[in-house]
Every structure is written in structure tokens, then in C-alpha cells.
Length: 238
Image 1 (spheres, one colour):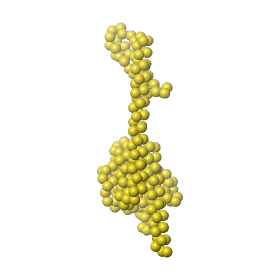
Image 2 (cartoon, helix red, strand yellow; image 1 turned 180 degrees about the horizontal axis):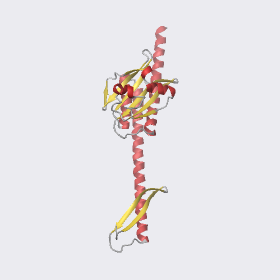
Image 3 (tube, one colour; image 1 turned 180 degrees about the vertical axis):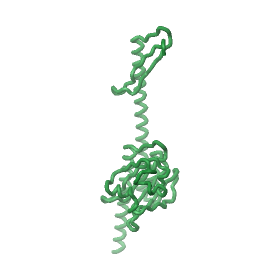
Image 4 (cartoon, rainbow, N blue to C red; image 1 turned 90 degrees about the vertical axis):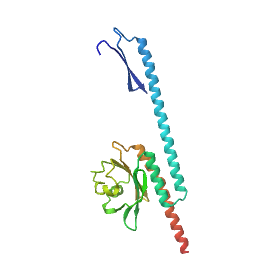
């Protein structure tokens, strides 16, 4: 403004500008002295330290919550709970960690050749997992078989991988999806499918790495159950 004195100093963090500190003075003839600038530099430094401390605290809190969630999932898998309860617990804890409320845990059924939902959450509540997708029609499954890595799907309503099944999968409400493959003995045994229903939600590296950690634990649990079932079957034949 005309007749207004303005002083601007950078807010620096590790030699990078993360903001600006601006001070105005409408007093006629006002000029900021070098002493004023030094004071503003000091305030900007304190602000930068406060911002960094808040960021580190938030990061520590997130890491703590993630560690606690992974521990809870490990306990659930080790507790020998009912299979359905275990699937719902694993999926529910992952959704809660991401602050999301919709997703499915899919497993491949060798007997029927279909991918079957073993747990589903809609609006934050577990629902009866009635979803069954024939392998030939499940493009997500085919994509994971070709490249068994986590898959982020934007705009599921129009994405070729999901639009054919948007009503059965629930993607008609999703704005983005994260698919974590469950790989057992170099084959796709299923997947964790997480739906974001909030506009603007973005799945990043953190969400993917957490999902992969959970998938790894789940695969070990599934493999142990398979080995246990085979051992019992052999014992019954002796």
C-alpha cells in the first residue's frame, strides 16, 4: 500500500525456504532498521524450528500408531481365531489406519477358479462378503499376475480395470483404489483392495508400504494354515 513500510524475511529450514515472514507498518515515514530485520530473522528462525518440531512430532505419532496396528494384526494372526474373524480384523485394522471405511480382502478359490471376497467393509462396517469374480473377467487379477506389485487405480468409475465390476466391487463410490497383491509361492493368492471414497484422497508410498507389510504377515499366516492342514491330512491317512 502507498505509504506502508514492508519487511519480508524468509523462513528457512535446512537452507530451504518454507515460508515468508511479512511485517507491515502504516506509520508515515517508517523504515525498518537493520536491528528490526535481525529481530525478524530471529523470529523466523524460531518459527522454522517450531514447524519442524511439530512435523517430527506428527511423524512420530503416525509411526507409533502404525507400529501398534501392525502389532495388533500380528497378535490377531497368532491368536488362532476363526478364519472369518481373522480376515475381518486384518482388513478392518488396515482401513482404520488409513482412516478409510471401504475395502475387500479377496482370495483365489482353486475349486471354483474365482476370486472370492473373504472380508468386506462398507461405510466402516463389516458386511457379508458375497462378492465373487470369475478369474477370466477380473482384470485386476490379470494385471497382478502379469506384474505382482501394488497397484493404484485412479478414477475407478472409468478405469478399464474396474468399470465392468463397479457395482459388485463397490467402486461406484470410490474415487481411488489401492490393490495389494497376496503372493504365495510365486502365484497370486488374493489381494487387499482398499477404496478411497473421499474426493482428493491420494494413495502414496506410506499407504502402499503399510499394505505390503500387512500382506506379508497374512501370506505367512495362510501358508502356515495350509501346511498345518496338509500335516493333519497325512496324519489321518497313516
